[in-house]
Image (cartoon, rainbow, N blue to C red; front, top):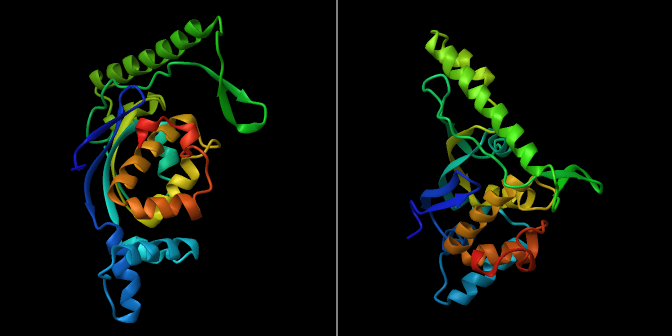
Length: 239
């Protein structure tokens, strides 16, 4: 049972499946209703239909598989995530509650990728890495200290929060159908996506595969255009 199992991501983040509706057979039923039919007595025929639908781009049947996730991630990850608009979101509000002193501190420094202008690459044995990471931490701690001081001086939460950094953790519920989830994986489980959101995408893919193995297999064969989910680039234990 995957519901409410928490998958840790980054230093303080997580992905948790809250609920889901449907599985591989839900897509089969939705496709066959066009002919007034339902599931086959032969599971292999049903699986073959999943692969046919995926190969030929008949994706609406996969909209009948729905997932509800609880996500905890840094604000900059959330802002990238929310660009995937065919889904439902509800996020913790900095107007209604005091935000906790939880923020993301990377373990290693990255530098611009010379072949991908919007990307970055890890560097090894950088002598000033500890200094740079300390600068990041000090800046974040100072921002949160100012935030608390503003609240203590009677400033409204909705205004005091403007001093907080993008590294602060936020939480939200994300309800998404399998078709939109696959689009998310195509874009975010890819080397061109920012490293941090890729870590979340891999966990989403793990849950997706466990709940809908036929759909995931067909997706990887016919529709997946990224590279971060290829077996040679992830640990075997991930799946």
